Each structure stands twice: as structure tokens, then as C-alpha cells.
Image 1 (spheres, protein in one colour):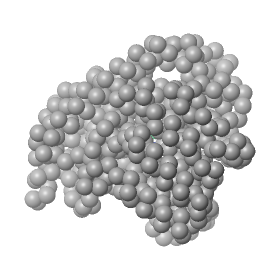
Image 2 (tube, rainbow, N blue to C red):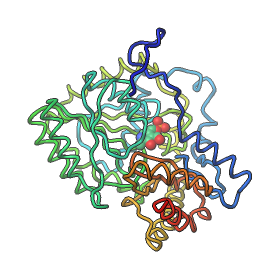
Image 3 (cartoon, rainbow, N blue to C red):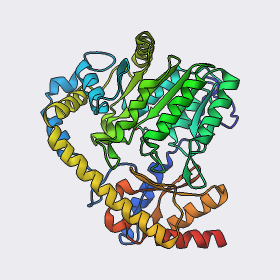
Image 4 (spheres, rainbow, N blue to C red):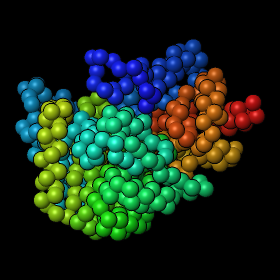
Length: 418
Ligand SMILES: Cc1ncc(COP(=O)(O)O)c(C=O)c1O
């Protein structure tokens, strides 16, 4: 954060420089361009799932259910600050879909995955302490770091274009040495923006590593699972969670879950934070602490939508799964086109496994900015991340995926040679 003159109405260290969310900004540019140049314009900016007609997907199974939620229920506060008990129960069952989590747990409803993450950023570290983030990451993590006056360090999620946990472990050790405590964010599966998923084996190694590290101090692992349900095989994507059962007493896990993506309800602001630890008292202590925070921050969750999610999971699961699976297949077709064509034309990509996004790695920040602008000049709208250009295939109809890699490769070459 740059040093600013104190604004008398604000507390110290509040950043009041003009805030513009680049994703929303570039999306507006893309929409305006599409009106004039519909054929050439590719809008690969926004992180919401759109159908082949380019319109946002709103699952019928979800919205048929939501329409039936009585107005009085929608108007009411939740029955419990931490979220309605039936919602908490169903969300846990939904995530623990293979019954492979056997740890004491607490579920706390939150306004989206964002709220679930906020609870951890606000509760686990003191001002000035360091949180460990991936080196290419969802920008809101950084807003939360700044808001809480924390510091951050970054671990490389890929080395030599291979998924790697080597740097994650090295940075974890280094932070533990200095701080005597570690909080790390692991956005997995379907990492935003690369589409990397770590899988069972890497998680197993990580948990063994965190257990060993926790002999030196407490370890908090925040697993941001925002895109979990859009993995290739959602029925088995949670298999890695079986590794959680072997955590030591000094390791705490938080699963930040987002209903936004799973239930196509980004605007409803619903998600959950699932706390897992070996000692039930530790879980209860976290539950109490987080409830206090949320009561003074957003008060309580979206009652109407909690009812809807419970109804969908209990009474309309088959219809829901049909829609979700069709969306997963649609995403896969898009990804296959982009990845295959990228291979053919030599466009570099981070190793993509699954999920909403595919990313072109670019380390040189000057090249990154020039490339991002050059793409826009050629009517291709993407989001510039810290170390790459993100292509949001979630919002890109198949016909827009064809030929995209070759266009992007040609522009990359021109920009490099500029
Ligand atoms: C990596 C990641 N985590 C969490 C979220 C939280 O989403 P929401 O607050 O809508 O659930 C997002 C949304 O874009 C995300 O990309």
C-alpha cells in the first residue's frame, strides 16, 4: 500500500485511493465492443458460468425451488447466527459427499466464500503477521491482507510448468521459523486462475508436512474450495479430503465453500466456513469466535437462500445434478478446445486440470501489461493477474473458443517482438 496523507474522517491506514475493480471495468469495455464488433469480440473476463447463448446460467432446479420459498421466510432473519441448522447439516453432507471426513467439525454460514475467507483473515493473525498465499491468486485475498494490516508471502504453485508444492513447503517453514505460527491459503481444486488441482497424493504429502511443521507452532490451512463442484469428476473431487483425518492436534483446517458457483447464485451471497480439527474443544472455540465476528460484521446469513439450498439438496438433487453435470461437460468442451489449440500453436499455458479458468503464464510485468492491452486492441478481453493472463472459459461459448489460442499466440509474438 502506498503511503497516503491521512484522511481525517478515516482511521489510520485505510486506503481511500480510487477503487476500481478491473474485472468489472474490462467486462464493461468488452460488452460495449461486442455491440459494435460482435464477431471479433471475445469476452473472457467475468467469472460466472454462462451458457452457449452467452447468458449467465441460473439452474432451473435452484430457481424453481427459490420461487417457492415463502416471502415470510425470505423476509426473516436466519434461525441461528451461524446459519440455519438444516443448512449447516446439508452443506456438510454435500461437501463430505463421500463420507471421508471423520473429524469434529463446525459449519458457519457466510456471505459467499468471500465471507468464509474473511472470517479467517480477521480472526487468526495479529496485525503485521504474515499469511502465505499462492503467487498467482484471486485479488480479494490481497484486499483482505491490507484490510487487516497483515503481510503476505507467496509460494510458487508451478515450477518448470509443473504443479509443485515444493515452494509452498519451503515458504511455510520459513514463516514458521520467524512467526511461530502459519496460516496458508490453498485455493484447490480448480485454482483460480490456473485451473490447477493438487489431487490426493499432493494433499497427502502436504498434510504430513503440516503435521511435522505443527510441532513448532500452530498451522491453519485455509482450503478455498470455491470451484469444487466444477471439477471434471465432482463425485470424486473431494477424495483428497480423506487426508484431513490424519491432521495433528496443532493443525486446524478451514474449508471456505461458495454456494455462488455450485448453485449459480453469485448475487445471493451465500457460502460456508467449515472448521475441522482433532480436538472438539478447539472447533467449538473457533465456532464461538467466528460467530462473534460475523454478528458484528454481517449479522446473519441469507435465510431464503439457505432454505432453497436445503430444499434442492434434500428434494431436487437429481434435477440439480443433471444441470450441474451438463455444465461441467460444457466447461470441459470449452477447455478441450482452448487447451488442444494452444498445444497445436505453441501458446504456453499453466498446467490446466479443471474449472472455470485457463491462464497464460507471463512473469515479466511489463510484457504482461503490454500483452493485455494488445489483446484488447484485437477485441480479446481477459483479466491480467499477477503472473499471467486469465481466460475465463466459464463465460465463453464454444464458438468463441475456436481459434482463440492462435489469435492470442500471434498477439503474444507481436508483443514480445515489439
Ligand atoms: C478463488 C475464489 N475464492 C472465493 C471466491 C468467493 O466467491 P463468493 O464470495 O461469490 O462465494 C471467489 C469468487 O470469485 C474466488 O474466485
